[in-house]
Length: 180
Image (cartoon, rainbow, N blue to C red):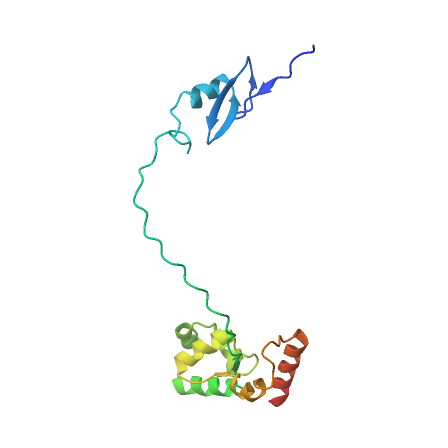
């Protein structure tokens, strides 16, 4: 027989001289060196880990179980999309003029940067729905319209089990742009 392969401590990694010690840490049995055995082996379980101590936890009265709510049948929500009105720039620009305040003052009060406010007011870019809501709230103007009402007549002809494809959605968007 050849030389026995040295064993290593499973905690610190040091080579173990002699047989070593087997201790339980967090419900796992590990082989450890003398140092780690002194450190962890002599302590009561539970003082250095979440190992059970052998004591049974006190049983408390079980709370009365509630009946599980029945899942409601799936009802698709009507497709109502929100769109920014076409003349948003004009409306915002007029509201800014009426306020009599500078872009800097307004940007602090509304919560939009000066550049964003200018770009929207001059029509360089369309505001996001979030930005439009901030502007609507501050200036008390209407910038968002829901674009779901006009398509109710069309919906009656679509079968209930119909799932729109990506191409259908693209066509819907293209048609809406052409209407403007």
